[in-house]
Image (cartoon, rainbow, N blue to C red; front, side, top):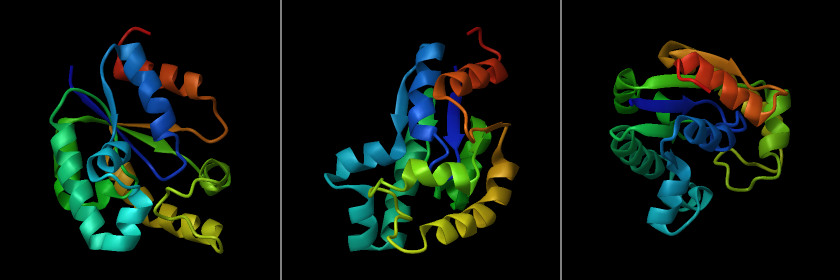
Length: 168
């Protein structure tokens, strides 16, 4: 079994769909953000705010590179694929881009204060800008693309497993 890496913007469903895909495949699942929070003893938003983006991205890069070396399903932080070392490492994985539009992503992240992009004012605009900046990178790295907008997690997991070529 190879590594299946889930990439996508905040609110695309990586943390929700990832465990379902792993369960169907009979492999382990790890969410990089959750792993980092447990290791650091604080939330991603706190790391980002206290230590700064550069320090957070270095922690994220190191964690992501280590976790991508293990077989299973790995949910990457939304910005991780923009880091060149992570992008290179993804060449050894099956990369599934969970694509989402801002309209569907916002309800998923709007009440989540753990998101790095969380802001009380201008969240929609920031998300639209983030999607525009990251979409070309996600598209370039993806082995498969799955649109998650308005779709149920179980259906998405079934589609991903089907794309991977494993029996459901």
